[in-house]
Length: 327
Image (cartoon, rainbow, N blue to C red; front, side):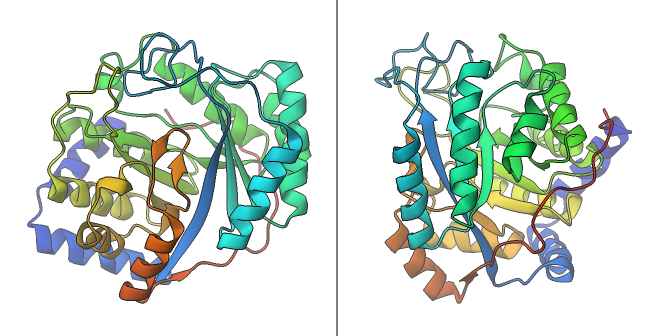
């Protein structure tokens, strides 16, 4: 099924640019307000020292990137950051930790953070790495709305980027998240030197998840000195727009988020991405450890494009549990 979808998605990528954008925008309008953008803020609650070897990541302990290994933030500091994010207009607050997976003593502290952020009437999201049996249920009980765990790339390109965890490990965590009734935030990174076929393969994998992710972050590689991908050639900008458009067509009900890499994108490129079906961004000056446009710049861009922030989802709460995900 996935292989068949890859061929179909490659056909989408090959459409004339204007035809592809017209089709993607038409799909977008059928399912969303075309002038509304969901706004999230992402905070690194535990930075650096990660034992994984993801070739793009400045937080890996084995790379010399200048990112220091820091302890887990305090509850008060996270709560203050969430309050500031809400004051700036964010409706979802995402917490990320540079772990392979959470130890129970650390998870207990994160559960308190989730409860505190939820009390501010913000949607909650966490990205904590691989989850063991029972941990997703604890997160759901604490009030978590979304769990982020990206596939990163297509299965056939995965081993060129990551060696310390298997593709199936990621699918297993997503399965546990769904079984606990949590919403899924799952996407990937493009511009890592992969082929167009690999980009199609990533989108095919995301589209084959059953149900499809509610949120799909599409990250453009941020090349960080000290990582193995620091000298990777830049992805051609219109190819990135094509990727957004193909994701929108293939994942018609998902929020497609412009994530990492926006700092390097001119306003004209972002505008094309919004037209192609992107309808979510991260708000704030930093995404974990990499730069992001500041809120004033994003407000100005929204004003130029007559965009407005999407209100929080209603009703909030758990989604029906699913026992398995399609492979």
